[in-house]
Length: 285
Image 1 (tube, helix red, strand yellow):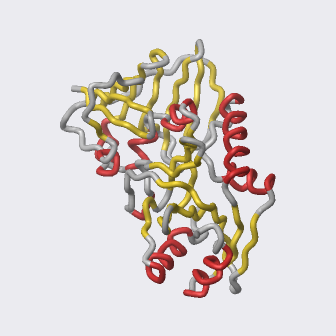
Image 2: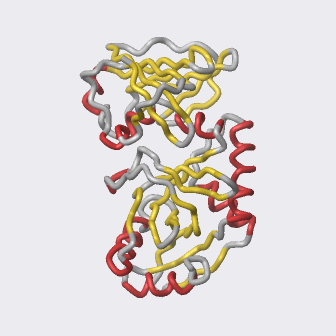
């Protein structure tokens, strides 16, 4: 049986055993519609992953990517483990086979494991959308995005805003950025890291804040090219695909031309909220 899902304006179907328990956050994107799906995925649990054919175009500790006749294949590993847990194989541009190794089937309800099988960032880019590593905070009429490397304090700062300004976290780890009707929007994404906060909601982006740790709270707006570089450092990029990289760069240029991007060194006190709020005063009106 195929179930239909929608992320942004990408409608897709998944064929899989009904007994498999997918992540709760992914279920928030299920839809009931008569619209045709744009891509069909066929998920199968196997004892052994099929052999891959084609040219290896990228190899990382957690991912191998192959290409053959304009079709892409991927094999996924956990960090520090040689054994692969899953595989992605394009049959055509709109049909994909997914394989999950049986010994890892108990992890199918983990957001990052399940979503990694779909190479979803590739489909999003085809829709002019990109995935940013950030905490999404609803303030007034839009959202501000706290970004930066893992462990820098995104969840901490979002928590301070929820405590002292009654703001609301929409997603604790990622968002999908897409321009709709001339405005850059933060859209729902089915991965939220350890925060366990994930809502399928859309809001206009007011600002992006790249965090740093500091004893004193201080920030500044980044210049255009510095903003682009900061953004790309936290966007999911398929570096082995030159067309992907070029399109991400073009989208980020457009984003940085419209949305203010700041760097902000801060501590973990209420004053960090006060200082940033003053920095964003005109933006948050």
